[in-house]
Amino acid sequence: MKQRFRLYRRKRGGRFYVHDNVTGRQESLKTIDRTEALRVLHARNEADKQPAINLQIARAYLAAGDPAIGTRTWQVAMDAVVKLKQGSTKERWQAAVHDKAFEGIRRLPILETRPEHFLRVLEFGTVATNVYLRRLHNFALAVTWLPWPVLNKQQWPRVRFKEKRGINEEEHWTLVEAERNPERKAFLELAWHLGAAQGDLARLGADNIDWENRVISFRRKKTGTVAVLRFGEEVEAVLRRLPAYGPLFPKLSKLPSTQRASVFRLRCQALGIEGITLHSYRYAWAERARRCGYPERYAKEALGHESNAVHWAYAKKAKVEAPPLEDYEKMGANGRVLPLRMQNATRLADTRLNWRTA
Image (cartoon, rainbow, N blue to C red; front, side, top):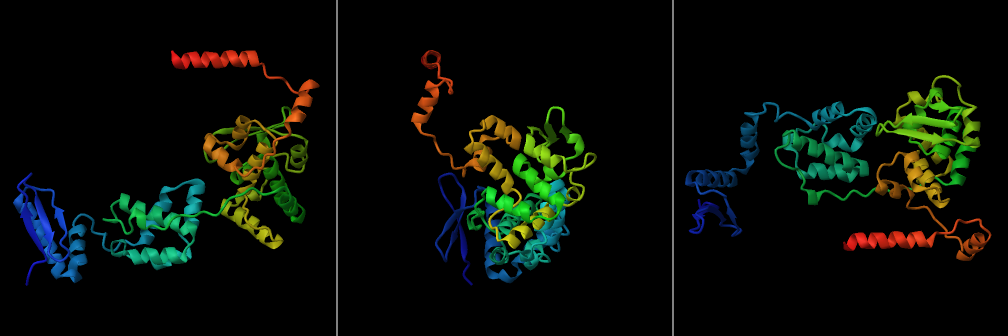
């Protein structure tokens, strides 16, 4: 029987190449050692003659270094990833691995995974399935439980997240008026006024409030940075309805973030409100701050954003209407707007120009 692959050596450089007699494709073996090149050639010809036992041969070689590689399933990989996570990230992974779309590969040995297995999971899954399956796949590759990629980067379907938006004032007050639980009602009102993440807001206690200076301060769970927010009369009215000692939200603080989000989603569905989550309160706060001209550096501090790009992403949907120039001119004539000191501005511009051209 004629061999599919044959070996040849180029004079220039002395490297060995393999030629495919079926497709005509030529591939460099990247070696000048004839013995090594012959081993690769024989392996390719043997694999072509006996495709049914290729996996068994590969498994025998791999098992020499990892005895469990032939029986390790994707459920083992899921459990390993969850153990490495902490806090809210661990909660999200715990919810993700229970996705019904993963049932097709949960008990499948990692070594026996083929592209069609992943494609079937992605077909029945959601955007979150795509995201977490990618991470699970990369984890298996990183710890060498998966010898080669199941899908190349170009073969993965593009992750298309749903459009995020802030909750508007009408939707907010609809939810507040329909809420009969006083604790959840106060939680929504504070979320509207403070824009804090739901986890940080739920963990607030009476000791986080400085009544004398009218300040709420807390350490962000996600980044560990300290947030200091000064509150006004409306927030004070809400705080007066909450416990004076211990947690401000005794019941909500004990719930995981996923359960708080689920309760909010059910409330929205009952009222016919679509396209928002609890996180939409942060988007709404950023949009309101931009519309009213709130200084950006203060807004970033209040929301805990260290990146300008992240903050702009939150506030990008704010509709800012520029007031008429004539109104500003009239206010300037009446002394209600501080005029720009053009002499100093011109001097500063000249200084910068001289510095750049020096």
